[in-house]
Length: 285
Image (cartoon, rainbow, N blue to C red):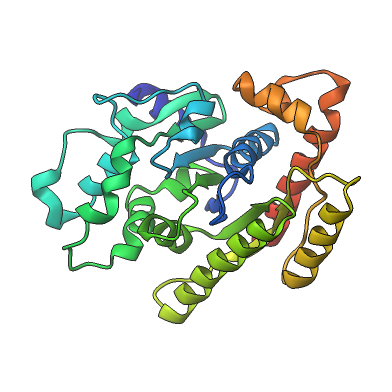
């Protein structure tokens, strides 16, 4: 793995410093991980070097890359704990070079495991800012100079993991399903963003836009809920709705991105993700 990582470093990213983006919603089941997975592939399709970081203890993001953690697998949890001097007693021998998994020539993965669920308890007693652990880990390891984009998938919660993600990101994408529950989830997560801004400890991430998923245009209620959410969240772009549930389901069941398929049935989905990747680049540059 070390030689593989060195080879990747030598080619370098396509820009002076990469960007960190996260896909977030406090409501689960909105397709957040699916969107993160395909967004990473869209950026890689544009010849960007991408590091995917799984920050969800359920490790669904890792699983989509056909990676299944076990008790001997180093994960982002081990690396974060190792980065905190005060927790020296909990340090393990894992190295970053041993933890990064090569997916293809443009995509790497830092996997999660169930132990990430104990992150908040593990760091409860430290004196350094607990909100900035992930941000400082990324900076200390020079990851933004190794990759064009770091794509983070987080948990559908409002705890310390989410705060760490938001403090580390340059921009956030918000997937949602057009319904009242998802709208409330968006309100909750954006309140956390506002709280981070009030803290003044780091730069507030850019709102990169809202991603409507599982949209059923034929249903009147879906259209009404969609219009309500667009009116409520008018501070950033609302992307074209994703409505092709069958093809999404097929690709996710096979643990493949929409870009793995040459069928004309997937062209629309591919175009949507490439358009989103273009919009993300535009808003962050």
